[in-house]
Length: 257
Image (cartoon, helix red, strand yellow):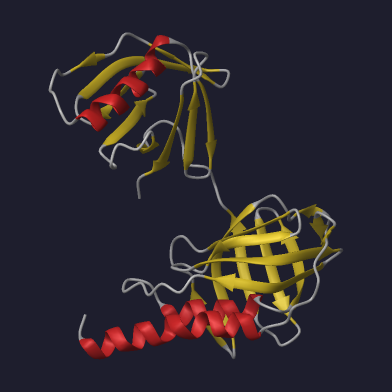
């Protein structure tokens, strides 16, 4: 990226937080959990599909989302994350006191971020739900279209382990057809039988390579191997997988994009 483009990107990011701070600061006390048709609005991770303002529609980058729950709205404009006070009252959604990070992402459209920030922040929005879709419209005519974010499937997804911290080198992939799990423990490769049923995974004896790595990786590997000593429960929340074993071992991982 040349210096001129870099300056433009940084300028767009720097404008984001002052813009949000200048927006309204209505007090938000939570409100009801539905809007318009009575379908669930709160407690749902909504992926942003597009925003229309001043007669122009901009498609959202991957990762733009918002969740409204317990009087708060949290999400991402695509690059920068944000949080705000939120109130849902009938078919009206109000966001105020919005705060956002100030990163500049070269691969993300900062103009979209600024447009979405203006559409959502300090506004009273009319909410319309239908199926898995939500439309938020401001009195000024800006429209934000969203859809329910789907959970990543357990099988077929490459899950990168984030806890324990193995420097992003540990990952697991479940194969439903073969009934197996394979991947890396951070240093050594692993393969094992894996049967999924009733929210649990029955794991077979792991077959691993026998390499030696730095102590931190070997300690993390021992934690992961404890999963294979029991029948861990699993839960997928959008792109996060949590494995909890009867022996107290908990492993968290995120879906690779």
